[in-house]
Image (cartoon, rainbow, N blue to C red; front, side, top):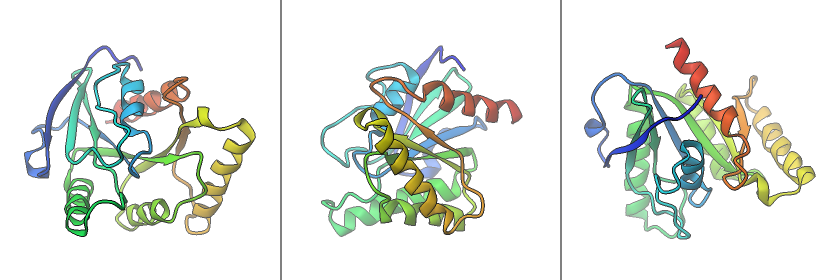
Length: 198
């Protein structure tokens, strides 16, 4: 799929104020500092569409971007940023849960995972919660350029093996790099295939 246009539409913390209409939405979420904004910019081919930051936990709102005037890419707040206070963490959790569970237009949630790391308990818990709530999702392993191929494969296989302990059927997954654009066509083609069936 080619992206001919991508524009910011709205940011808010209230799911009831998300854009009206029935256009499909593909939301991106992950632990703070997983490379979400960089991935969104790489996928859309717009270097400053989503604001990147060296400071984790910067995305605090639901951000809607209209792609090709046909579907929305949604940037959700990151989960698990330890330096936030408990009240702030609870606020972010409510934003995420209300969007993921109540937003009828959400067609697929992409869960971003740092390919450099061993399976993280917080990611596994979040994915388990998605399964319990029958949320359609796929996984994206980010920052593949930061790993040697052998180590990358090992880390991905470890994560899939860990999931396999609980899941009979594994969700789709992609391996990406915002630096080299690895995985860009795979992710966009996957979105295109889902759109074609709607």
